[in-house]
Image 1 (cartoon, rainbow, N blue to C red):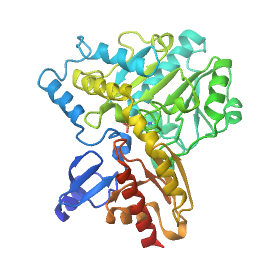
Image 2: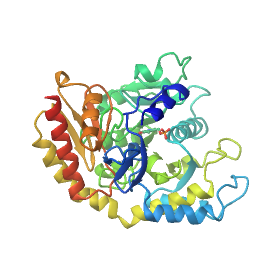
Image 3: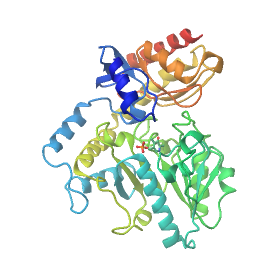
Length: 397
Ligand SMILES: *Cc1c(COP(=O)(O)O)cnc(C)c1O
């Protein structure tokens, strides 16, 4: 294992600080390292692996497509992209789809679309559009996206920053309302904040934003890149409150853990403002990505992952409620942010102890650890995760 670590620290930029486990294979919720030790993957690639590692259906679909056509570019049409747009829009009860690759690109696309809609449809004067975002947001790593982050590590020394964003308080509709003016084109929020530590807003937040945006002719953009596609036991986190955003961004699990696939999904009269040449991506909508995403959409349309999440969520909640040594936790579906008392250690310390007990997880901030296993886990897997957590806490205590 040591030589893998040495190679990485010499040849790889140090923009991550991974745990010292070297994974070489995985199936379902379980992965194996180069020493032959097995772990339950309770990060699931930040929810990119919602349907499990080397998922048989997804691998079969990708393999079949790889032997036929992988990349043609949007200069020509391909036989996977139109069907994906229809099937994904139908799954999301939306009208139009714009395919990209990574999550940050989908967010950039939503921002550009909202601005263009503001100038062309709403009538905002040139270069005056503003977008309201939330404190402790995470929407990706591009220069524009980090311009409206309040995470000092993500932002410091990367200026000058993109203008046109205002920050409200997540969970507080009144704080958003105070920032709305005639040049506001959109409110951009995660329905549940993932990287901030799985922060679940009060029940009046998303419905309140929906009402506020409709009343002021402002677009509601939900970033469902981490919260969406089954994690919460519903297809989209917005479904928890029956809220329909005007645009939403999808990514991570949309690529089935095989290829990066993202998309903006939403209203035809909004996405329809973009014309040829105004936005694009070399790889966006390529037939391999589209084929894998179609299988993901099919899996979600059948509803089994969401049903499994709803079945196991109470077990996860009960386990966390009765766990000793936790300061507090948030929980929805198969998604939880567990915070330990500072004197016990950092989130990193807890993750190291969890790994020693066969559970892989990742700290978010400070003393908070996210638990987000693949949606394919069994009741025994959930029990293994909870037992590992109890043992890790006992080690620290
Ligand atoms: C991960 C994430 C992104 C960025 O996705 P990338 O594929 O890493 O660019 C954007 N928004 C949210 C909510 C995310 O969790």
